[in-house]
Length: 306
Ligand SMILES: [Fe+2]
Ligand SMILES: [Fe+2]
Image (cartoon, rainbow, N blue to C red):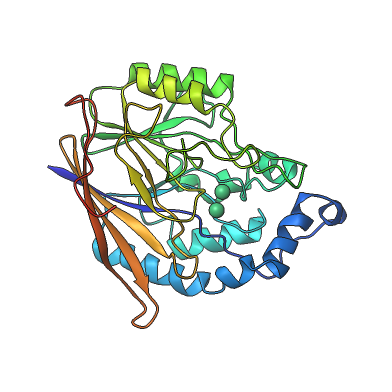
């Protein structure tokens, strides 16, 4: 028996009628909006609705066992944006797992509001520790998916960092310790490293990455799935981690638009990067790759295509 997954990320949808408040005009949301409006981000995400609608049709056609969404549904962290993404993706009908990105927690208020968790509630079902929201685990076939929240609110416009925190990391250890056997795939927004293996910049990376990788490794995690970076990459042996990583990249950014399709049989993962073609308004197969997820065998290899 194999498990088929679709990995989508970094949608950055904007929605009309978003609810600006006075403090947004002096805080981080203004800076993010200026980036969107005047520094090219808006242009790069001009076709989000069209591509996302096509992706939603793709989900119905290809009937995945689970959709994995690794965050950044929104551009500005508004509830209107989250609601629209949840509607297009039909989260009430399609089985999935979702974690927030830093744009979904654009401000301290957005992080505290629980809007992301409310809009994606059907994709946040799972086994938890002491009823805390994160982390949580879902079983799909013989595979365990573990959702970890790496996003946090910030009031500083230059701060795009993430943090998992001691409390969540402690729950992650306990959750992993209690799970039955099977390949374990950790899903979060932030990467372990860049495509070239280097650490992310101080203002854009995951602050407690080292401790979290250690906790994941000790708990038998065999793969780390993430977004945040908008270009797809797969590293079979990233520096500092004993398991592979896959960055989905952005599904909706013009020119980069893609998502990952993974089929897992035992501990073997066969992946295809499916790329959007604006001429035909359809996704097509691009690169193929294979990974052996640690747990069954000590080493992994990326066979081709990345
Ligand atoms: Fe993003
Ligand atoms: Fe991000």
